[in-house]
Structure formats: structure tokens, C-alpha cells
Length: 419
Image (cartoon, rainbow, N blue to C red; front, side, top):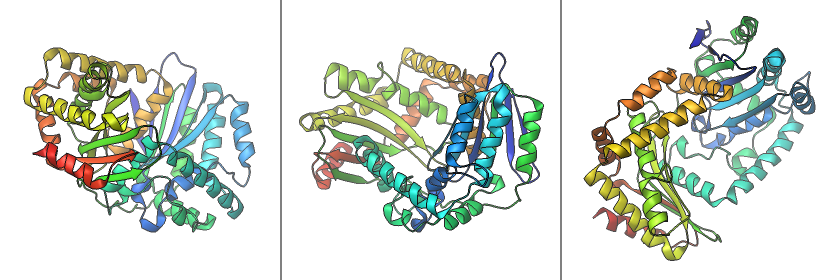
């Protein structure tokens, strides 16, 4: 069972002891992601994440890495559209050292102009790396299209035009204005002592209180986007309106996704790949945000099978919303989802992530028993009702990358499917 301590400044510290382990995972979660940036700030949250590893007044970047390696620990970070997380995992005997290193990075990063210039080059190379991955391009362009004119359309990595204007002092000021206590959650899971918790309490109590700016609202708008690229396969992502991540029906949506494209027994995998041999990869997923969401189906295939595959996907969706699902199908999806949750929570890293992400995004951490109960309560009728709500063919979107046709070709295809 986890414990939560809310400091006077609003920062929340969540802890969960995991019996029988000798490791601990700690994460500092901040509600600052690409959706909190305006047009001229694109890439700031991710840039700051990189700068935290470049050194402090008392430790160089090399010293931070060597000290963590010297205790057999691991530390890293990631940025999403909604948040940034800095985390470390180590043996319990070295946890005080890991906390000191992570907090030194978090509170004391130097942001020198020399380091800023060097890391900007690294990020620009990271952007080029992702531009070589058509699956990533397909997903990014889809978000840019359906959330057009809102910060959710911004790429997490930013753009060269905005990154080139960012200085170390500007990034530090951005950090100070966005890393506010009400948007900070510290999560610790595994084997630790009360002294470790007291240490974290003392360090984070020193953060001045202050309100954070609210993010701008976003809404899903149907769109089509096409990117011609010399690839062996065409990459297609079909999308519909989804759910915000805090929606009570998110467990229904997860089972719906598993039934459609979550595994080898799913309807899309069986019909598009196994029975018809039209592709190698096909899967579905939900992408929820604070105020909106998207449900997507991805596949990659040759141009000669593209139209047949899309028609097959449309057919599978129509059959799903017309006929519903069988008790056996729902039971299989439920057991797979429950197993995934329980097996995932067997690691201290997963436990920490569950604590931090849940507290930051939804304000509540469900216990494993509560999650299992939520899946057990889902009925066939609930799945069918949500499917009929989501799969509105008049609100379909499509992102296509590869040796693809014109935008009008795909718009016509979607119009035909909606009739």
C-alpha cells in the first residue's frame, strides 16, 4: 500500500514499500511537456530534460554519470506531451547517493551557454533520427493534424527554428516558471528507509510555493495528412476521437483496444494479417490527454495492398459495432490486461512509474486490486456502447507516410467508407 505526503508548498511525495526486493526506484515527475509550450517555445520541455544531465556547479556531466555507475545505478529521463520524468534505480544501500545525484541535477543544473550549444546539436540529431523512422513520423503528423492550432500539435522534440533561439538563461527561466510545486510529484518504490523519505521531504520542502499556468484546451478535429517518403512500406495510421486519460471508461477502452488490435488473437491481427496476408504489422492504441484523446489503428504494408487492407479494417470495425463481442472474447481480453498489469507491477521501476504518473495526471493512485476490479466490472454492453461512440466513420482521420497517394485520394477513400 502506498503512502502520500503533501508538503506545505503543494509538492506530493508518494512512497510504496515492496517486500522482498533489494532495489529502489525514484522518479521526479513534473507536469511540463510539449502541450505547455506556446508556438515560439516548442521543444523547451525536452531541451530542459537534456540539460539536467549536463552538470551542476559541483559535478560535471561526466561526474554525474560516473558517480551513478559507481553505485551500480541507472538514471535517465523522458518527456511527453503532458509531463517530464527524471528517474533513477539502484540498490537500497546506495539509495541516499542516488537521491543526492538526482536532486543535484533537478535543483542545481548549470545551464551554461557552452553546454546549451552542445546539447542543441544532440537534439537536432535526435530530430533527424526520428525523421528516419516512418512510424514515428506517421504518429507525429497525425497529432499535428487532429490537434491543429493547439499545443498538443507541437512535436515533443521541438523544431530547429525554435531550438536555435533558446539560450541557457532562457531555458533556466522557462524551468523556473513551469516547474511549480502543484505540478511536481516525487515517487519512491521498493526498499527504502524513513531517512530516505525524510531526506526527500527536506529537499523538496525548500521549493517556493507558486501557481503554474494552465494548459490551453485542445479538441480532436478530423484531418488527413500525407507525407511522401522513399520507404519500402506505406505507413498508415487511422484515427477516431478517443477519451481523456482520466475518463472512467478508460478500462473499457483498454479492453476494446485489446480486442481489436492488442495481440495475436485480436480481430485486426487475425483478419488483416493472418487470414489475408496483407501486412506484417497491425495494432491499435489509445492516446489520452487531459482534455481529449484519440484512438488509432496503425499498419505498414506495400502500396499494392493498401486499399484492400483499409477496406478490411473498415469491415472489421463495422462488424464490431454491429455484432458486438462474445463472452469468451471479453474474458480473454480481460485476463490478458489483468496479467499485463500485475506482471508489470512486479518491478520497482513500474511501481514507481504507476505512483508518479497516476498522481500527476489523475490525482489518484489505484491499487492493483482496484485495477483488477475495474477490469472485472467491464461488460460486453459497455464495450459495444463505447465502440459505437468512438467509431464514427464521419470523424475518421488518417496519416499516411511513404510512397503514398495524394491527400485527396485518402479523403475520398474516407468519405466512401463513411457513406
